[in-house]
Amino acid sequence: MNRRRSLMLAAASGSMLAPLPALATAAPGTGRAMPPAAAFAALLGQRVRLAGHAYRVKAVRAKPSRNARIEQFSLVLQGSAALAGGLHALHHASLGTLHLQFSASNEGGTQLRADISRLA
Image (cartoon, rainbow, N blue to C red; front, side):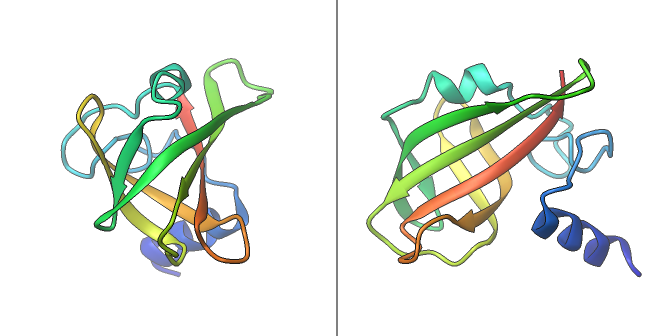
């Protein structure tokens, strides 16, 4: 199985963990670290761009982790445009561009969720 397929399967199963260098960066090839949950929580209610559409940051939900070095949280976005799940570039002035795996969390596809694991 090639690396891309194994990463896609890991993302779909919700088992992606940040220790892999390609997953721990905000944008492939930039070397920037994924921002912590607090950086996303500061954006609650603000708009972000995703696939050319505006979405509002609805929630940032922390998840307990057995490993203190790994921070896990979900980012929930709400918009009016339906968007299929997949890898999308999220744009915000304070965070720059982040490449995240999103899945639709409602039937219409207007609410999206990204589950994030990063080294703390």
